Image (cartoon, rainbow, N blue to C red; front, side):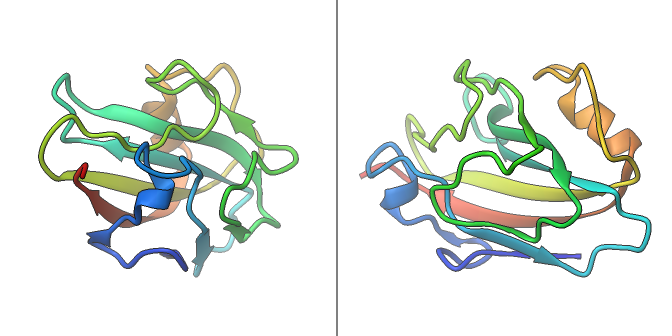
Length: 145
């Protein structure tokens, strides 16, 4: 499976447009090469470098299998569900590291089920992993100016 963006390269710098220093919009993401039997996708954007431990910026489940990309500044695709992130909102929470360079790990998961229910920040990753057939990561780096 492969995850890419028109806006940044793997392990490259996130442009400020997608952060709290810019427009705070989500970047373009596209995926391919998922396994047969995939029935839906899930997406996370996590910062493992946050001072208080892993910080969730974006949690999306139940992305229809017909969806292959999310355009820049997209809302939630029809049928998908955004779960409350660590900002306390159900949408993309832009990177805003307090100090140093942080890694923002975008992960798309190919799932063996069409719908996951009763997800929250605490159980999202474990429930997604229970149904994951494959996954792909794209890492963006960011340091505040």
